Length: 348
Ligand SMILES: [Zn+2]
Image (tube, rainbow, N blue to C red; front, side, top):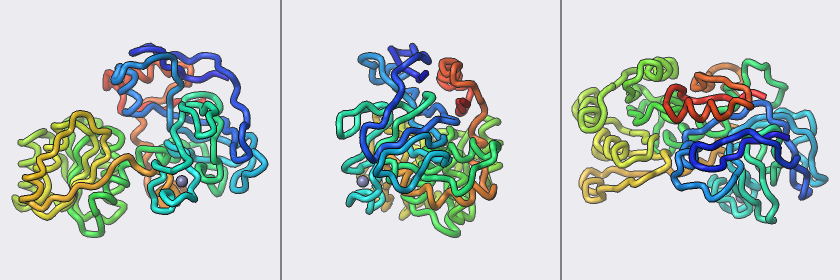
């Protein structure tokens, strides 16, 4: 089969690799229908950290089950399934507490599993899925093709935006500001509105991204960044700041912007993969700002988020502004690297 392989900084190729096979009774083989490129894939693509050798990549995909091991009970060949960006058993003490990304038996696509078997990346034609019963969520019906981009967001960006909102404490009537206008930040706007937020401010200076934020329910847009951006958010909320701020970037500047946009006693939910983030704990202490979040346990949220995707109440797939065939995957990375695409869908 063909799969995406990252060889070195900005050297990414679709190439022939070994066909996946069932190793364990709990495995399934999935034929990928659609995959996508994540903002977090850009870090190794840019050499941060530098890759040490050819490696498989991609962690967001949906597809059709082709085969299952003898122990698999919840999915069968022909089922349309959503794969979260980590595999997990959904039964261990940490999964039971909703932290599937720390599953004691789990792991990540493109790396070996606990048995030492290689696990395929998501940006390829087929994937061996370990712990299939715990990992995969099947669609109750065969989805119409038009739904596939929306379902694909359940692998990562939509649950990640939701995790930011849940971690920050967003509930009905909340005021919210979202730092970051990438696919996760936009998804966080949608998630906050779905949780009943009364007023959501999206922080973005790009017109195309502002438009999607509006479609996802943003009530206001703040184009300024940094201290000026935070001051504009505080101004909107009576000079105090937002109850809940969703930090969806992961840089020192974005975290500072989030903290300064939060009202005293409010909460920041953070889901941006952190790079050189520093916290001013004394300032947080003085203003009673709480911070919660981390890598999103996407698997924990898929069943909750799936129905409104299936019935069209929400359309999270609007974050995809580029669709390419899998053999153009290198062009997709380049487009996202150069920010000419918000998020690239790879169709198979
Ligand atoms: Zn687990």
